[in-house]
Amino acid sequence: MTTEELARMLRVDSSSIRRWRTAQPPQGPPFIPLSERVIMYARDDVREWLASRRVRPEAA
Image (cartoon, rainbow, N blue to C red; front, side, top):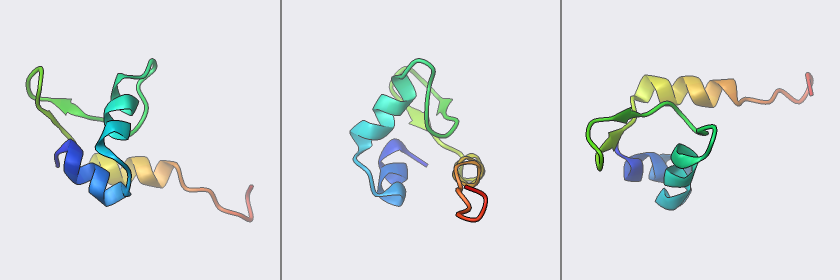
């Protein structure tokens, strides 16, 4: 999926996704740079990233 599609899915601005990607160390889900200007995200990677961020209230 594209940066814009991911942003819509997560209900954040696409600039947030770009900021996560360029942070040091990078944040957010793993990404695939197809070129200098084209970045893609694999749906399975996004699902795994979301699952890794899950907080269970009983364990917190």
